[in-house]
Image 1 (cartoon, helix red, strand yellow):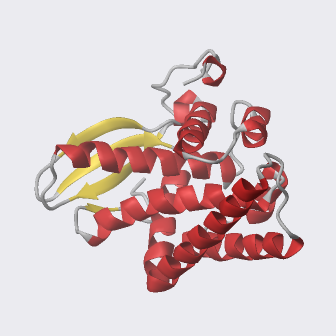
Image 2: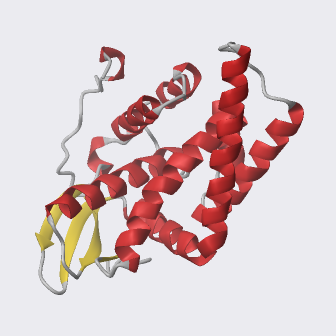
Image 3: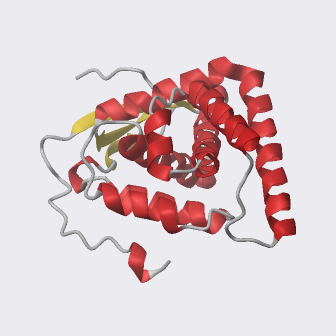
Length: 231
């Protein structure tokens, strides 16, 4: 991780009494890998939605937009870094922290966070579940389109290779479709911030993969993400 990506903001106390609680219901058989995979995917989805699909304040919007501008977006390293940036732009008092956890049948995981964002994650999972095989086919088409552009860029041997107007139109349409499958509302704003439909689509694709992880836990009966809180 480069030093430029370090969060140098002086944090407020993470134990702010204004935090809300969101309960994830747990059931079924969990192993040690699950205890990493599920919270990791949830945390990344939370940061993505908080920073890119809500009106909540971040530490520095320009830091996020700067990351969109400078990252090469050709491999996993970029995605690791962009999620690192997004997570660091969520104010400390709203970063998910564990309030309580009990693993039984059933059990629960209580989190301190911004409940509205957690509920939006739950709705994203529901939207993706409802899209079913259509979302799977859409994502497959997206992978094919992005792969073709990568091949053309490599053949041209140009870092600044420009996609055609028709390709831009196709990518923007794919962004709209994938956003609908994910319940992501701020597509226009995302395009404005990235300045490139290819980057927007790669970001939404990364969000799709992480949301799909959460959906798999729901479909396997291991977790339930309520669309409301009891508070």
